[in-house]
Amino acid sequence: MKSTHASVLSLRVRDRKAPKASSLLALTLLPMMAVSALAEESQTQDARYAIGANIGTTGLGLNMSGNTDWSLRSGDQLQWRVMASGLSADFEDDEFDFADIEYNKGDIDMFALQAGVDWFPFASGWSEKVFFSTGLLYSDIEISGSANTDKTFYVGGQQVNKGDITSLQTDIDNQALMPYLSVGWGNKITGESGFDFQAEIGLAASTSDPDVKVTAVDPSNVLSASDLAREKKEVEDEFGGAFGFATIALTYHY
Image (cartoon, rainbow, N blue to C red; front, side):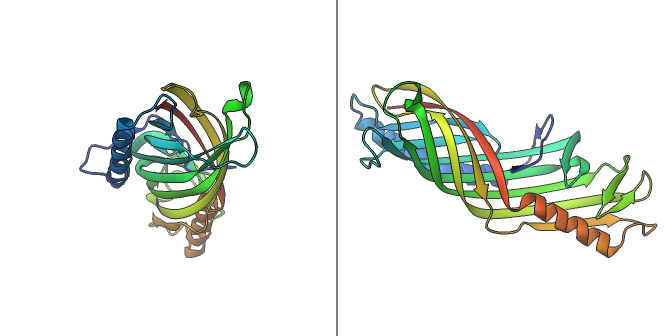
């Protein structure tokens, strides 16, 4: 199961004006906060809504969910949920690996919007907070990285040693609307208002291929056009298809 993005160590947040992920996240969260304020005015003893913060493979964000009157079986519960998250960061002198090449300089800009239905099939006991979810996940990821040319690596099957090339640059733009399935625990909106935790792991299936560019500064012509084309295909395969995601959230239901 692939991750939406490769592992990044010691990310440093970018210091520049209005990254795209931050702008999209702000526009998405404003209506969610407005709905929260309106719902709080009509608060009753039994909790009907929840709003909270989350962190996961798609960054930091907010989520909001609410009860429905629908039911699939006796004693179950169906909730709707919307979650928005984003991440903008630089990495430098840290390892960022994809398609078996180590990158040590670049940046990542990510935004995700998830909308779906959570089904809580159990009515009591420890399992009452277990839920199954399905819906749509929109993901917009931009990654730009420079390979660590001080190490030996392979580009499209061609071995590149230290000093063979000046640089290798990979740029990825991946926008996709994907169906997802997930399982989680927590945030069952019943009883009185209060805080709760929620954890979720899931699998999403990409419906489109990422836009990938692989370029090299290669004075000695170590790499051919076919080598770069094969490397481009390997990156596309790694970022396409099915991938896994995970989220942990702290919510307040009211």
